[in-house]
Length: 116
Image (cartoon, rainbow, N blue to C red; front, side, top):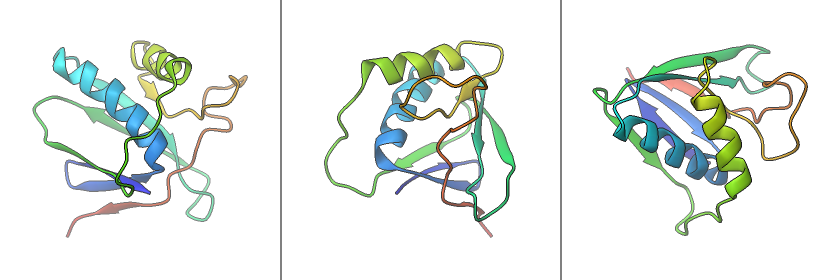
């Protein structure tokens, strides 16, 4: 599990998913485009979801558990980029086939924690 640290919160994602999110997020922020990102909570936490507003003025840190870069999927990047460019903002979607509802079947993060 890798982590995305943003504005005092640490969010865990599988390394492969995080690598894809990194490309989409960095591309948007490099263009100075702020946007929302939404993901489902882990099943053991609750059945809810979270959203954050990403802006280039707030420090962002990606940490990967594994030493090697993940293999990238152009199709998955395209799917994530499409959501990031839509009014919904970036929806954390799995690599599988599209769902009727965007968040249904989306990967669940392991943990979200606040720094104290």
